[in-house]
Picture 1 (spheres, rainbow, N blue to C red):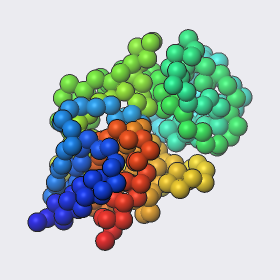
Picture 2 (cartoon, rainbow, N blue to C red; picture 1 turned 180 degrees about the horizontal axis):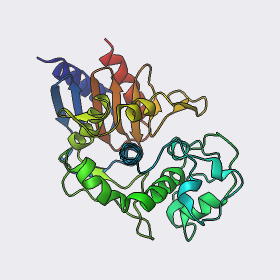
Picture 3 (cartoon, helix red, strand yellow; picture 1 turned 135 degrees about the horizontal axis):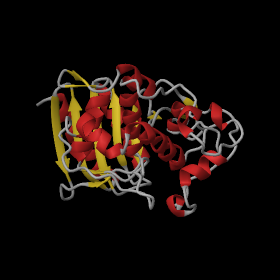
Picture 4 (cartoon, rainbow, N blue to C red; picture 1 turned 30 degrees about the vertical axis):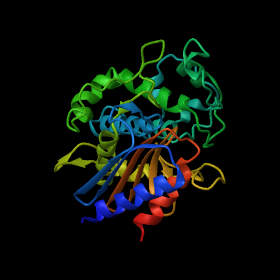
Length: 287
């Protein structure tokens, strides 16, 4: 039995003992994989795991010389009115939720204003201050599309097709732009392909798709996010932890957990149980 199969068996036991509402589990260690399902194998909304995909879009555009993650967004905003010090904000800060622009998440975020990105950019920045909100990721993709065109179409030949993610559709706001911080639906194993790409520092089957420096920055360029365990540091679309792992974490338990050569991917419908499962997964992969 492979290490991946052994770990998958132990994680299945953990899910069933804890009652965590998992739909599917995928484990990769090295080149070995193992899977288990509790529900039908169908595409489901991955929620904030999509933020990591937005980071990959920006990283690919950076590698193509179309934008720079570290340059002020004022180079992209044109004549859009900007709040105080927003001209100093970078794409990197938008993607790490550290723009300092106060516009918190709400269930109606995409429809509260005629144009969410314009509203976000019109507000003042308080400096490199963390606030978790889809508005930052959404605005980053709105600015990026000024250079690359439609984000979904830009990624189709550069990311989705190479990963074998056929017919992927990104849900859109009322203005027709991708939601960016959410809105993608993938099967558990399809979500695991994104994890494999991250683990392998942007390489896929020997081909460089995303700069390794961008993948590294995703889980090293941390921003202080608070004191709650597992939510103390945020990077580029990812959270630090549990322990020495890092993770993409979507609402209701969509998880891609990376530690060493292991990638543990879960799709679920259990918002409150996700943190305990993530901690258990890192404990089990560490032993």
